[in-house]
Image 1 (cartoon, protein in one colour):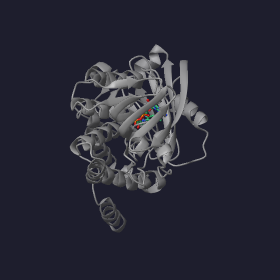
Image 2 (cartoon, helix red, strand yellow):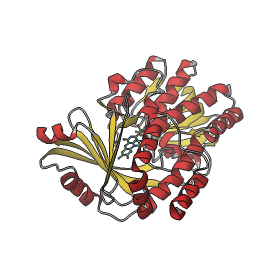
Image 3 (cartoon, helix red, strand yellow):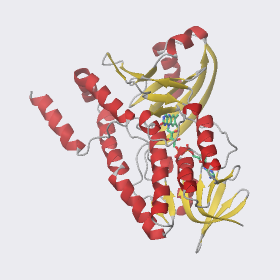
Image 4 (cartoon, helix red, strand yellow):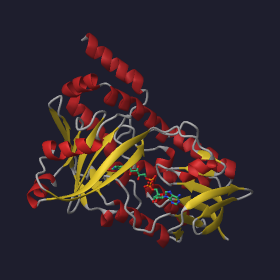
Length: 380
Ligand SMILES: Cc1cc2nc3c(=O)[nH]c(=O)nc-3n(C[C@H](O)[C@H](O)[C@H](O)COP(=O)(O)OP(=O)(O)OC[C@H]3O[C@@H](n4cnc5c(N)ncnc54)[C@H](O)[C@@H]3O)c2cc1C
C-alpha cells in the first residue's frame, strides 16, 4: 500500500496550494484526484487580485485576459458604477489550465499526483486509510480539498451546515461584432436574477456568462439566462454555447473545520465569499493555512488542528461572518439596497474593489457600523 504523511483530496486551487507548501518542506504528500488533468471546472474563472497578489510565483502563463476596470449595473435603480486600478482587478483564467498549472508547480516540487483516483471510503485506525477507485492509500493527515460536494467531509461525519447556492454558467462563442463589443469589459448585473447577479467574463476567444442566486429562489435559470443574453448583453448571434450548472458554498460550516485529522479547505469548508461567491482566493488561502498548520505543528495531530483553527479564527472566519451579514442586507432587502446604491453607489463600488484588490478586508463590527449608518440616513 502507498504511504504518505499528508494526502490531499482534490486538485483545485485549495488542494494544489496546500501541496506546494507541503512539498517545499519536504513532507511526503499525495494529491488524489478523481479526474484526469487538465479537467474542466464549472467556474466564471475570475481570479481576484487579492488572490493573485499573494501568489509566490507568477501565474501570467495561466491567465487568459486581465481587466483593470469592473462595471456593475443596477437596472431597477438605474445605476451604473465602476472602479479602475493600475493592477488587474480580475484576471480571467480557464480553470482546467489554471488548476493544472498550479498542480504542475506542486509536482515540480516533488509531490505525487494520483489522477483518476476517486475517493470512495475512509477507514480510521492508528492511521487513515483512503479507499479509492484505484486502490488504498495510507496517510497520517488528510486535507479535504474536494470542493462543494466534498465526499471526504461526508465520510468523516460532517453534517451539512453550509449555504449552497445554485449557479449556472455558459461558455459562449458569439459573432466577432458582439465579441469585439463585449470583450472589453467585465460586467456584473445585479438585477439579472432575484437575490443574485449575472456576469459576463470575457476570455481569450469567448465569453463566460452566468447567473448565481444567493438565496434559494424558485426561478427559471435558463429563461433568465436567455433574457440576460439578449436583452441586457444584446447578443444577437450565438455561435456555440456549453451549459454547466453547479453549487457554490457561500457560508462557512458551523460545525468545525478539523475532525479525526481531516482538515477542510476551500469549498469543502464553505469559504467562498458570501457577497460575491468569489471562491478561488479563499481556496488558495485556506489550502496554504492548512499546510502551514501541519508544518508548524510538526505533524502533531492536536497541535496542528489547534493552529489551523486559530489561523481561521483570526482571519478568514471573521471576514466571512461580516460578508454574510452584508450579503443579507444586499440580497434580501432590495429597497434598502437600491436606496443605498443610489446614494452611495460609487463608495460601495470602491469599497468592494478594495476588497477584491486585497487593499482591505471586510470591516469588523459591521452590524454596529451598518446600524449607525442607517440611523443617520433615516433620521437625517
Ligand atoms: C458557476 C460558478 C462560477 C464561479 N465563478 C467564480 C469566479 O469567477 N471566481 C471565483 O473566484 N470563484 C468562482 N466560483 C467559485 C470557485 O469555482 C470555487 O470556490 C473554487 O473552485 C473552490 O476551489 P476548491 O479547490 O476548494 O475546489 P474545486 O475547485 O471544486 O476542486 C475540487 C477538486 O476535487 C476533486 N474531487 C471531488 N471529489 C473527489 C473525490 N471523491 N475523489 C477525488 N477527487 C475529488 C474534483 O474533481 C476537483 O478537481 C464559481 C463557482 C461556480 C459554480
